[in-house]
Amino acid sequence: MEYKEIIKRLAPEFDKALQYLDRELAKLHTGRASASLVEDLVVDCFGQKCPLKQLAMISAPEPRQIVIQPWDKSYFEPIQKAIEASQLGLSPAAEGAVIRVSVPDLTGEYRQNLARLIAKTQEDARQAMRRARDDAWSQIQRLERTGEIREDDKFRGKDELQKLIDDYSKRIDEAGERKKKEIAE
Image 1 (tube, rainbow, N blue to C red):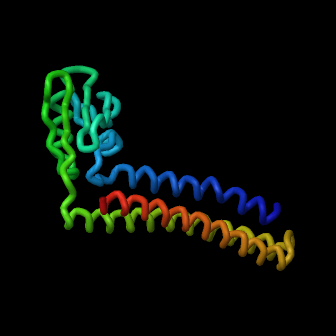
Image 2 (image 1 turned 30 degrees about the vertical axis):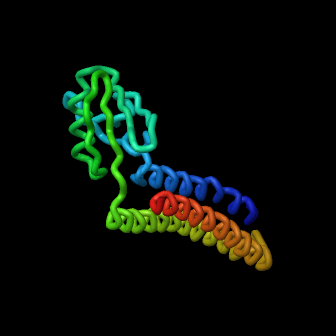
Image 3 (image 1 turned 120 degrees about the vertical axis):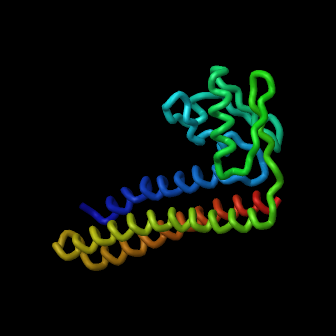
């Protein structure tokens, strides 16, 4: 086995960390309506817990409004209760065959809390990358100890590992900055 193979196997792990970050950031309420804001809310419907996206069609026809169209009228009340019980600070209103949710403006305090949450989510993604990097570095060192690669290759592997980490760290920073910019608007 060569150190390049070990490093090549890291990219999918790092991509998973970025996907996690993107999913978590999409769930954050930035004052702009988005289906991702409510789609994963757990709804207790007839004794079963289901994500909202399995019970209704969700759209955001306006910048400050989410429209939820339940597949069945019996889902109306459980969906409304789930939205009201969430930590999102949203209040649903039933209108005919749909539930309209107005997305309020963000307060200064809420913006600060979101900024902290973004930083924590970024750090979680970085920790996942660090764990994968440390594992890869251990494998590379083991290859050098057993004589499968030379010491020069070990240090080349370390440099390539660092370049990969730097690239993905930059992408994590960019994703966080984009979300912070959304919050500031």
